[in-house]
Image (cartoon, rainbow, N blue to C red; front, side, top):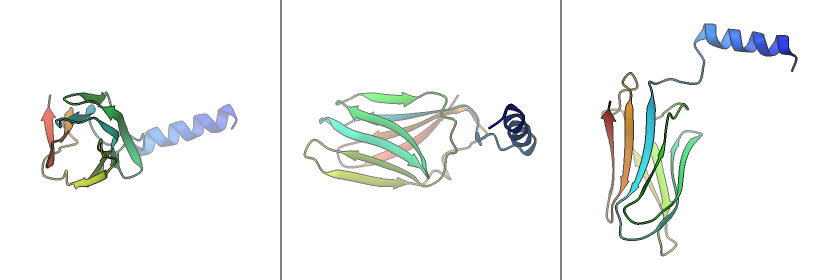
Amino acid sequence: MTFFRLLVVCVVGMISGCNGTEHEKLHITILNSTPQKLTEAQVRFGKNIARAGVLIPSSHKTHMFFESPVTSPAVLTWQDSSGIQHEEKLVLDKIYDPKKPGELLFTIEPTTVKVEFRPE
């Protein structure tokens, strides 16, 4: 792509407001509150993924300044130490306000999962 075409694409994107960020500053955290090691932990927002990978007990991983669009429901997936794959759909509509900066905290507990929004 030539420099001129690239410049046109960037300018058109800025004018139309399509810069890929549809929310304020946001951090995505996945917390392992189980007594076992989890692998392949991630949360999907449509085609966009925040990966945590391996989480030892009581650990977390945070994606700072997550810029991809956040859709609802979010799909939280992980594999437990027995090799069982888990998937939970979490509706964000009533807890998350994209107009406010903050953190979406996804917590994996032994028998349930939860998500909360912590505004700054």
